[in-house]
Length: 190
Image (cartoon, rainbow, N blue to C red; front, top):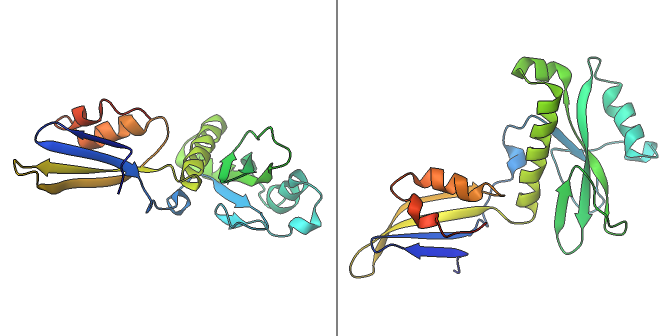
């Protein structure tokens, strides 16, 4: 198996690769609920129902979510780019042929009170959740193998961890490795 990055310091070896077994981040505890609809894909947390009854996603949001949540909802739109792979964001894409709105990510304001965050913080968390899901959809989660290498070139596995993604992947890997092994990742560029 090929790795994106390998480094040996004489005694230890670090291997970084794409995590083919990454767990869907929507199966974790998330603040927002992603409600999506696409003819070919099942994306997000829930599949939007009754989309055929509305002429736009804004109408759907009003009819299916806002009218049922008495204390209000914080929400952002979800957009999908589908061309040789999938990408998702909250701001949209500049390709009218291969992109469109996919749904919404939202949370009830009553839940925000319970967890002690405001609407701006919720929106920032939504962007992070969507970014994480985007990396997952694109197969861009990383994992590492940390090995102890002896003089005969044989090695034993010390640690394996995955789920690293995005611009902060290197920093998170350094933290996971700890002070003793952090130097092994210093030449890696995300």
